[in-house]
Amino acid sequence: MYPLASRKLLVAAFTVNDMRRDSRAVIELCSALCERHIRVEPRSVERWSQVRLGPLPGATFQEQVDHYAALSEIHGTGFTNDLVARRLAARGFACPRLRESINTAIGIPKKPTVVPKPDLSTGPSGDADFEEMERIASAVVDDIAAMPHAMSQVVRALIRNADNNREGLAGSWDSGEEIVRSFLVNTMSATFGDEFYLTDPLAAVFNLEPHEIRPEDVHDLCRTLRYSIAELEESYRSAPLGDIVAMAVLLREVIPEVLAHVGAGELTALDLDNAAALFAPGMVCLVRNLAAHEDNFPREILPSLRTASAAC
Image (cartoon, rainbow, N blue to C red; front, side, top):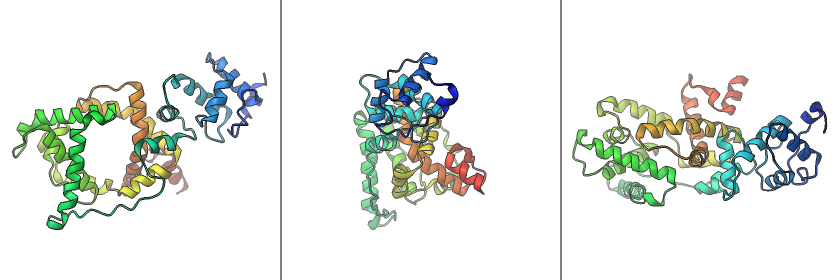
């Protein structure tokens, strides 16, 4: 084998030809993994490179070793390559396949789409758009079985919370489903530019006391976090992979805490990794909006924000 100093100079370009099973780079990688008591066959490295699960171009030798060590741990029979790419992201590793694997699962179009701003007025002209938001909210509540497992757990927990808390709310509510539908319509209208006009459903679904929520605080938060569908889609299409991976790692830590708070139970490691990666680009969009409005926002969350702060 080559001396350690020589190994560290090996920075493959990660094309299929560079990562052939009999290449020097692959032999050195497998040797370094073996020193960690991790057995990876050269043909596996070659195949992972072919399906774009290897590290990004420019990775150092040590980064390559760490990447393939993680890949060997999570790659398993029955897992699609896209799922493996997302699981890698939640463990802190980006691969060339990552963005495509997320956007295909979410259904993000490759080119920007023109989404007209909904009419949120209280007059007759706004009826059609509010009816569409109500239709979407009803579909979420009524079609739980069709959702990914992680999301269905959350929706069921929100409905259960709302049903348990509805007697303490102002007005008359027939069921937890009705409260969740109202919460979702409120959230969508606030996202599109309206005020968060009804806070009781928000309190009910998250197990909070209604008096703990000040409407003005909710309005301020909504204004700060507000984004357009076009901005959200663009984050999925173009957010730096380093930001997506950093957010996926953070979400992997935060999601269990959120689920515990709403009583949604635990996720399997596979479901947790998958959810963290799928939501990461959207959260990158929200975090960048927060950083733009709040001077004291912790910019170390995203690599691109750290770089921008260092340049100032």
